[in-house]
Image (cartoon, rainbow, N blue to C red; front, side, top):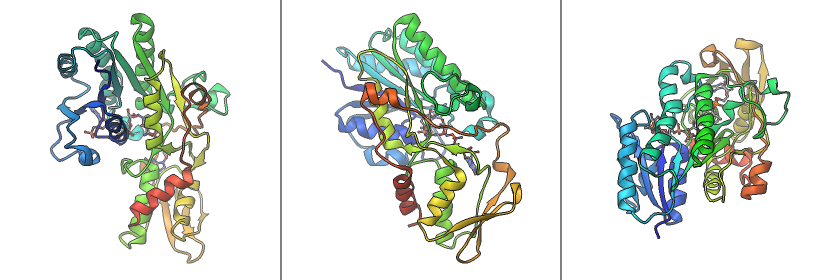
Length: 348
Ligand code: NAP
Ligand code: F7E
């Protein structure tokens, strides 16, 4: 019986690449969806590219036909499969950019999920497929409106961006298909997670890459936006293990994955820069605030309003107790360790 078959969308992204690696190690046959691009976009999976158990197909979440075609191919190739794991990780995942391309973000991040679920039904795979949806802590958005000070599966949502709103649709359509068609469909409500494969325009990577450029003398500054928002940031490698565990359960459910520790962007900058001997202090206010090195007086961190969002998510702190109790999942990496690994790579 063929039970280790998986289809991953977003396989060229941070999480998709780690998940593909994990599942190849577990001897899965891995099908991955990649997008056509004018330049190479497979750097994160270069090291597994020639693995005989990795099969890549071109497609796009906004193209329902390609999803039906790939699912049909998988069904044909594995006629005796009892289970097909599907991880829907593809998305326009940048919150700030979702304000600039809201319609595309909705097409990919909301309707893409609907097209996928319908493709599964059209192919007659609804009893075989186990569907993981990449939901997000951005669903909580204006977290303080709920009165909670830590966010769990039962905290009400209040998204604050076109990205968050599109992901809210996906969260509910996954729940709806689970309840309506008895599908094994789960939402992983994941708080921020990064690492050395993180996209360059997410804050923790922008900080470590910027620090690297300063250390090498390639630039004299790091320019950022709102440094007072707070995030709970874990390691992508730990989080993909949690995704896999969700699809190994007896029944489908939704789970928060988070570290339970939160820092402001200001603190993240101070922590990362400290690793290279800078002692960052702050002077000035608002857009004129500057971070300088106490030892030398060098001004290193500047604020620019172009990095601010029309609506901000001020804080996100997750409670992953349910994942710990039911999945036996816990994060293995502290923010200090994560930043340490990123600084080491990006300051080479
Ligand atoms: P990422 O690095 O930005 O990767 C996104 C992936 O989706 C890439 O492979 C990208 O392809 C692909 N993609 C984008 N639009 C697509 C489309 N229309 N059709 C097909 N593929 C498309 O994101 P990530 O950090 O790995 O996150 C994975 C998922 O988890 C995303 O859904 C994200 O929204 C969600 N999430 C992330 C976090 C986090 O902190 N990392 C937290 C919660 C939830 P290209 O390589 O061709 O661009
Ligand atoms: O911003 C502030 C910014 O873009 C974090 C995605 O993976 O996690 C991610 O979304 C905070 C925000 O991530 C800059 O205003 C300040 O408050 O790194 P970010 P995000 O918006 O939290 C969630 C869970 C996802 O689901 C998403 O896919 O940092 N910030 N200055 C900045 N942010 C950026 N990007 N750049 C700055 O210069």
